[in-house]
Length: 263
Length: 297
Image (tube, rainbow over all chains, first blue to last red; front, side, top):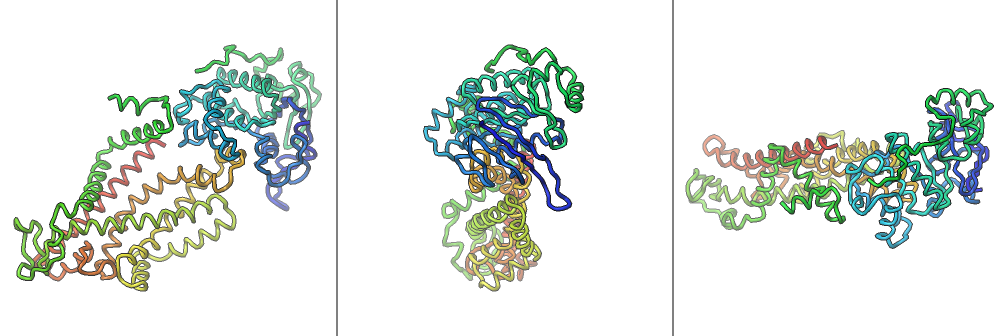
């Protein structure tokens, strides 16, 4: 198992003001599997993702990544193992740094060396070229920015990739490109993925198993096929399915342009 | 034209080209700001005058006393007249530019690092570190600036170095607050979280992610503050706590001219005008920089 969460609770505040953003979350993701977390805003899905990433400490329970239990503070080696792609490609890249600077920093932190080759390889991997290398984020489109964010996450060669609504800030056509890119990268690198989204179609496209969250708790764990077939037991999941208008129950066909095109 | 195309290339081929291109774009935006350009012209003129002072005027005439020649009005030999000891006022104003520039540069070099060193950790770490650092800053902010500078200058003894220290000690609190505010607005940004996730240390995040975002507003603030710094320096000089005679500091020159203000107005007015024009120049430059940076952001 690549990711194991056992009875994880994340809370803000103390005493009477304590609020549990995620409660008693238990899930496990196998090596190379893509696991989805769905739910509406405030359901705690992003909180769980951030606890796995180590951006917020979990109050209770146990987080185990690649066989290693995570403590309060992550070591540099543990950091390298888990990387994340954020929701907003406009906010997740430093506005005053070129692509080259953004991609070089993780190499410098982990003293990987050979920065020049690694940066150009990472760019190529996400479908960008040397012409994008010395641009600033404001000279790139939203889709290109998200590719840079993916390249930044992959440059450390992590085992686990966390995705926080990686397509929700993008146009529909660009969404498909990014999702196809992520599927390809997962195949090629054997990445374990944990993805958060409120969009059932997006989740079903990428993930094998899906957990539905509501008010900080997992209400149902199901598969993409079962969800697509409407074969769910929990009343909240049924409601969520109904509210996702436009979700095509025939399956997660999303290649609108059928392309992973370089722009 | 080729140079221009190279600088504005949307797909730069090297780190240097991207950097230079960024600066060139900022320059193009700034160039459209007329008042800002006037300010830049004045500041460049001040720097030029200070750098080439011995070539513009005879260094000896700034300090040599010719009592037979005292308090002369404007003439070909002395375009701005002479002061109460017969020294050429033009030469003194020109050499005074060096002193003013020295004060401004030294104060900046002290104020910005102190401001950043206090403001960045306060905004970044928050909690009790923030509370402690900001209360410390409030103590310095509570005193009126000139009064505190006077107290420091009086305690340290008169002189230009002490004037610089006194001004710097009173000028840093706004920079600390500015750096803290800028840090707070960026602290929760996703690119900071991404850097944390990559395993970047706090020091690395502050130095490589936050400082570059704070610096523009700090520099703009500094440029706008220059006028105040020059005036405070002149004020200390006027009260005899800054540069000491016979050094041609503008504030001290105004001070000696006040006794003869009615009959020989130029003795006090010319250095006063120099202070005025220089302050105006820095202010216009700062305004221009602020307009350009806010227009872009």
